[in-house]
Length: 263
Image (tube, rainbow, N blue to C red):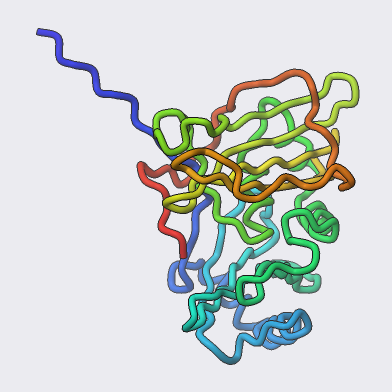
């Protein structure tokens, strides 16, 4: 007797997130030791974490072995949010702050496309990891998702977006290499809300260093764009035209059958 085959099931790739209590003791000790410095750095960018209802969690990024990545979130009674990323070096070095939201308002240059954040990310990702994970056999999806986390995202990347009618027009996670210039591009969909999905596009040079990035929100129910693409006068290059490769397998990492609930 032949049993009916189970229909394919959509799965999601995302980084591991840890609550303060679930953090490694060494990371908790580091945060405690540098708490005053963190407060001062955050205040410099307009965030006072000593007041309000600030919460935080840790994103575990394989591409940042020497850095503790923390998301700080403050939800206000009117529903608005303030959000920033704190990057604490496990060795010596200054704490980096990436501003993301001020009561729902983005900085003048949004975090995703701010060249200063390219520099921060490229500085913190070791050169050998950047080179390997920007190759066909590397963890290129994890590298792209890690950049998204640094600039305040929490991507949940579907392995087969077409299995969900809400994201039927969303692209597969894709890695491209221009055979002439050796420029690379990581693109993936992010289902992080009930009525919206996001397409992230991150451009890299041949050494795996971020050179441009953009994200665009689309409504799930009609798959139409909500945010217009950047004007043509921006510095973001066109996608490399050749060597489109299907999504490569990723190392074991938080794979769930449902999108994570936004914080």
